[in-house]
Length: 215
Image (cartoon, rainbow, N blue to C red; front, side, top):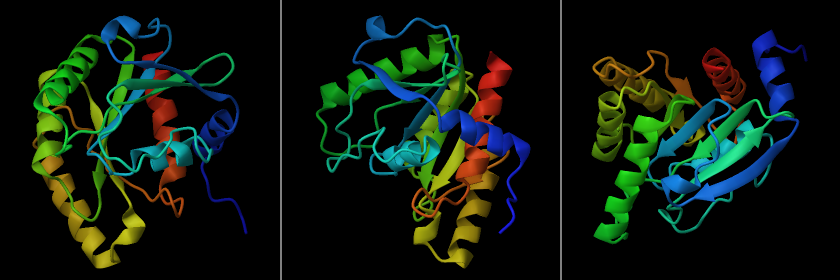
């Protein structure tokens, strides 16, 4: 079978197939690493498939541990890509957790908002949305926060293999239409399945392109 991937996709896969290492967890802003390379942040509702997507992008099985307890991660987790480091991936705490205490939620909001607003090396944020559910109010609140902090973001639909093609088409159309109303939203949606590999090559290439623009 011939390789239909683009040169950009092949180059991105080569980069991500090399060194990818966990750097640190930052429960507070004072623990953030030095802002020396472009960062791409990943955010989404708890159980949206963020860890699975990170594993698929980095061609690893467990670079980001999938947790059975949604909302468990309350820190910013940093991963370095490349030797020397070309990109840092930032795994942000899942939002929309129903069981978390109010104080934990407020601490999460403050950590995330301050990071998003003040991180000069943040090249792009990826907002992950479950294809089966489309945008929910907690996603809209996150998008509003990104609009207000002037942080540009890409919307990434996850678990696209878990829904009928006709339903997926409706979800894509609805999310794309709503995204037009958000000034910081990137116009192109990414439709992915970590399990099936759908859209992973294109998203990986987009991540590299965003980082290179910010370098």
